[in-house]
Length: 484
Image 1 (spheres, rainbow, N blue to C red):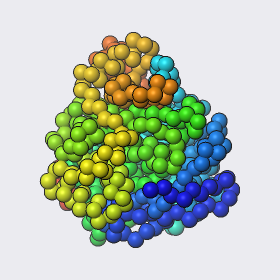
Image 2 (cartoon, rainbow, N blue to C red):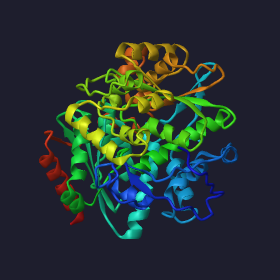
Image 3 (cartoon, rainbow, N blue to C red):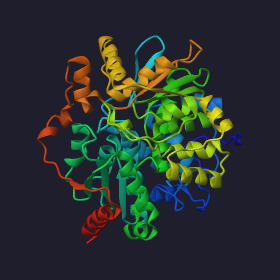
């Protein structure tokens, strides 16, 4: 099903109306500002645009060659409606990406005759999450100041979201932030990037469990209506649609750099929670010529199993060398499911309930085949990850283990058309995973200058059981202390 194309010629023009619906069909439609602040819909679903904005080939051509912040503002502006005054979104994008360590913001590095690494780790916390969260922090500040409100952000992280969210939200006057991470299941660099931020509006909770437990706790807090209202909860996880919207531009930027819209481009994306690769799907839904989306998984291979055999069955989470993908319940998959089921909220809700109750997700054969025509999936073992990191290093490129999973998957599922370039999402700086890099290459990557003293900084965090009441008490105490 295709939407009627519409075009917005410039950021100074009045933006079209944009409303959002829940994947479970029970929540009332709302505008971008409400979606930004709500995060999760009241019915437990995730928000998606009521209609998708479509760009025509001449629209894509008009973006070619423009600086990254301008492309970001133009693409994201298709989703924000009238939330921001003319020029404000562009100003926020310029400010958000001014601190990145390269003028290109998201540079492409050629790896071989058809593969390119899209380096998404030049932001303040060295991971792709900075692209969305540096902007979301500014969006929250702008909207909350105008409304005269204060919110409490809660989020779960498998490693990178937490530090990026904290960096974006630290010391902001109108919000508090609490991040849950699985105790002992992030790299030391990832943990310290979170726990050494001692700003009064920041609190870190280490949960005795895995990422899926942390994610379940966050969703449970949002589904507890009285607690949600009391704390004025909001989200920075990729359950928040604004996160996805802010990641679409780098797919556009890369594709335009390699010849789109006249040329198709494939993307290989290491992913566990399905948010990053769904942003690529959204770019394609908007008309970007994406030939395939290749998912690189680790030993926690639920996404690869689903793509190859329609086997969406959860198994115990097993620690790996790529901890940001140590996930079995990919929360953003619900967005794709909703689209595959013809935007049927009731069927989506029933399917998600069945998954929670049985650990398996029955997806109709036709819907799965439609997805398998676009997506490819590859599970990459720790041994294969090390081998790929070693191979890339011998060719002069240092990759973290997640990026290596993406490049390995790209070799397993290269597009048939030999002229189609493959862009690998390089999602994290090698220095975030020094043990794995040293194991693969014999060389320990140094942290960049602004993090050189990371191991000497004081840490502050609390260890809690995987218990909703204990976590809610910690969130309440943090928010109340700062509100007083």
